[in-house]
Length: 604
Image 1 (tube, rainbow, N blue to C red):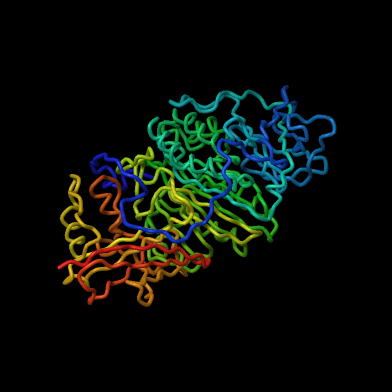
Image 2 (cartoon, rainbow, N blue to C red):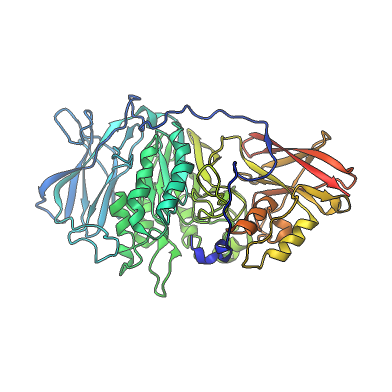
């Protein structure tokens, strides 16, 4: 994400110590057990023992035909990354050079035209898994750049020389990727700018993932801004994947660029070299076909970057999708989202070719996931905003679009917690964490897991009072830290009619509901602040998340002055002076219920 777009994120902040996610009064009543903990274990293979370690087999010797690359996709039965006697080729597997797409013949053989600065990769088929290296990073590609990258600050790709005799792709059979039940982890914006921030990520989201084993088949896809401009941090950040219990894959973001690249074709050379990844690719797990796209165009003629797919990638996407059976789910992953709420009127922070992508996916079961915006969004089919219509001619969404939130949250800003990382509340009031797509056949249920919390933590409750709005107005334009907002859960009796109880339901969406019962009374439906019915974003103190803003204006970071997942209910005007309790039940679009309570005071 472009930091310059958020002037408030550099607001000075003070450092303190506390525990928990945020300092507000909540009591959860729903407990969902976490996956079985296997601390420090490696990704599971078909035998349920250790990781399938290995690499792409590059056969030494110069190929006699430097215009064509060939090789074999084979069943690596002894898992030594070499095609030995008795290890057959696998037919019908997709292989690509990033431009042309082919499938292997009956003996697992493929041929592809060769061109300079290509990355050749295999699409992992269902029922198999590609090997991983010592950091659990998936190994499924080969770079061809004979003379190496131009002179780049962070090195780029070393000279590869002529085409080798063959490039063979080993696969191992996997019951995990054969299963119709998959759990695909989506991690947004690790975005480490310093060694210290690498440790924040380690103690936060990656420590959580080390305790989970549910994503061992589909693995983890980190969708861009792996680091924050300093590409020398790739090795340290990459090491974090060694904590995972599943294969790791990466996408490039706008902070993964070689900013000194002379042309767009070398803009992600260091990303490709250090993470061993193509810029874009696909893989299968269960009945899901995951397409990972490179959505950043750089450099533009006037400098800067843009959300876009070039013609070559778009043609690859057409060919890739054409080979996918229509009974499969398409998961389309990008760094810059196709469309989103946070930047709904921006051409830079959404994808120029969104209409063409929709045409390619027409008639398919599909879901899009993106990062970049440092917000959490669950946009459903039929949602619409004025900016989408005016900027891209899109009347409404044809399928679900998820913005996954950021592992870095709001760029590691805010108060330091005793758990070893800062609050980093995001621009929509969301908190740092990861998204998981729970897939059964082609049915998808998304879930967001808050950093350091179990799966029951799904909302923040607060009060938006006239006193809060006055405090907001007094401090919102100041470059200095705001004084702390005193007694945030107290409301004067004569201001009850101007006070809302707010619920920031982070994965809330169209079709979700929030019901509030005050002091055990009848539950009343709260109103969503953003209907997603063709309007513009509603911005300001009245539409803000007071829990988030009271942290952000005091301790630094962005400002949660708008959200597509905030509900509010005006408090009854006849509440007596004293303590009151509100029980809030949020029900998501899949029917899952989460209940929290908020205790507040009515004063004279």
